[in-house]
Image 1 (spheres, rainbow, N blue to C red):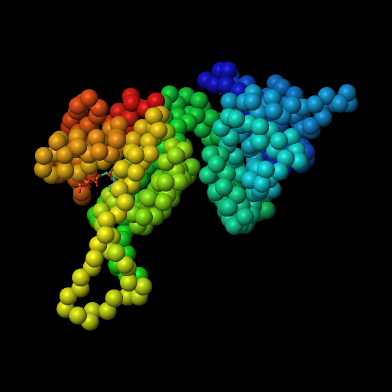
Image 2: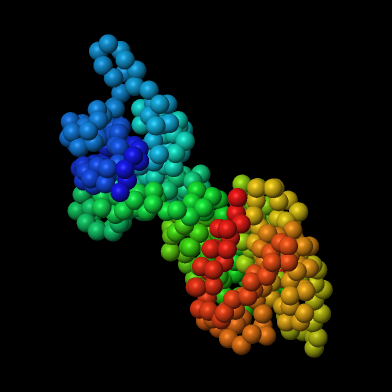
Length: 399
Ligand code: CTP
């Protein structure tokens, strides 16, 4: 139930506006409080009276609400809401949201809103795939606006493709999940590194490693499921994230990963560094393909930046930092040293000595190293379950 939750629904001018009646009805049934703002264009598609009746509140459309010149307070509306869902969101409105245009009440309210904002785009398939729409959605997503992806199917134009607004039942379900998630990760910004790095030798060859990138992907999906805003900086991987709202920053080299981490870490509450970063890179990658002229080839390697150490050195008090280590000898002692040196709050130790753990296995065995010599060793488990253990532990230490 959504008892007492205040949801503001913004309706823009698309044929999908009729679906919003079902969304409002669903949320009201779950005992949410609903207020509706409509653009004047949307009033051609569904009557304000219908939405006012369903939401049990007057619908706001213009800045001036009546003949007495009474003002519709967009700031108050923006601050009232626990969640603002703009559904349907047209290509035109998406573009205005990005540019900061506020020539109608809905847009002005968006600029004033402090709560999470979701948009459910609805438009014809070519409008949806147009570069301008893609860019606008990417910019909104980068700023934390959740995109409820439109679905595939028959469109009002008669064409088939992606552009149908997500079904009202599904949007209501997402809202319910949002309000019922209890995790402390909800609303937190999480930076995850994952995958291998590729260090160029020449334009076609590189030094890499066997990391599949799966751990980073699983961590990202689970953090998103627990309500976090997730940035995943990952080296090449064949796996993809399930949650479309995860910001995936695909990189190749350690230096590229370092650059991306430097940008995201200052705004993150939590960092989980699972990447298998190459410790060294060729000093000067050849600009054209190296020919096999001589019998020997010597490459000079130089050290890569230690990205996790940088994050540890630049960690604020309220930030939590988690690293991984793979050890073969003096495991606990080495891991403790790493924990201190890199200024971590939690270190996940993978031991190559444990049968069934490490590269190429579906299972893993980990030990958690924490402050005050706290140590916790887990059983051999399926990798997905190890991820749950890691995040459950993080939830107990995050501020
Ligand atoms: N890491 C990093 N940047 C690097 C190297 C490592 O961010 N250039 C991170 C990894 O993502 C991981 C942790 O640091 O979280 C691993 O630490 P590292 O010192 O590389 O451990 P090992 O790989 O075990 O290295 P070694 O024992 O050779 O020092």
